[in-house]
Length: 171
Image 1 (tube, rainbow, N blue to C red):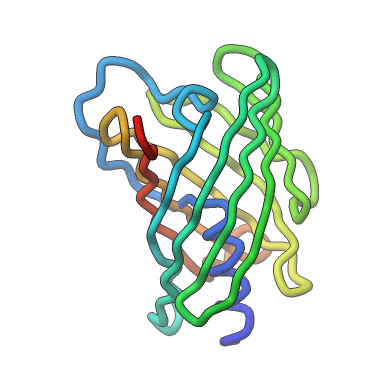
Image 2 (tube, rainbow, N blue to C red):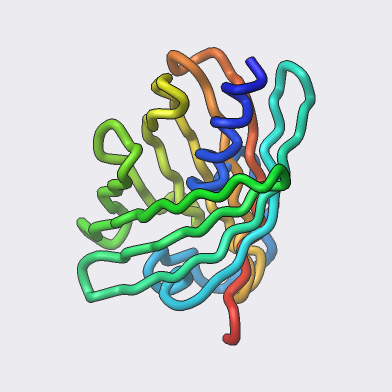
């Protein structure tokens, strides 16, 4: 089970998301391509909800928006020294929805703006298992987003939670 939790932690870090919302007063809703274009950094952790084990991680991100697709490259470093790299491609479908793909995502991710937050729902291959991710991105201020995620197996057996604080660099 430790292997699964470590793998899940890695993927969660990549996804960067969990449940709950601690939104500060913001004048405008979070817009994926506006916040994530440019250089960003994140710090956070994955927690195995069965054992309480925690795995810390840091992520360097680079986002590029071409007017239709946001490409978000993520470089992960975990507290145990493991490194990983993933790339999201978010295609904007309308003002509130996107289609998301990543190399380990089984089918297209559902991405939508709801109540000022961005919600992601997808299934990713982690350690040979298909794990369900429910992510929430909440803007704390113009330079900071809280990224939380619930991770489950078979869509209903919760295995972990991720929490990341994402900051825009140099803005």
